[in-house]
Image (cartoon, rainbow, N blue to C red; front, side, top):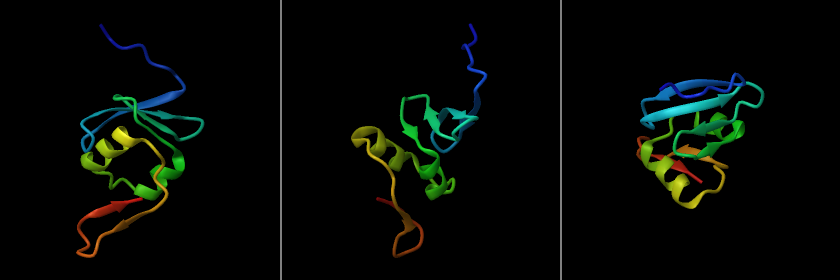
Length: 80
């Protein structure tokens, strides 16, 4: 049976997060299949570089991403 879709959202599969995302057409906010929510401002900060590890931390502790930068080696993404 197919899921019921809200016409106010665009749906896509995230390879990085390994799940479906619902993106609000009105606000740009993202709701992940596992219930984690990202505001439009957070999406702009992470610029498509979110890792599954960072996502799991947000799921565990909640909160809001307010800063995002590359670590000393340039490879690791640090989220605050």
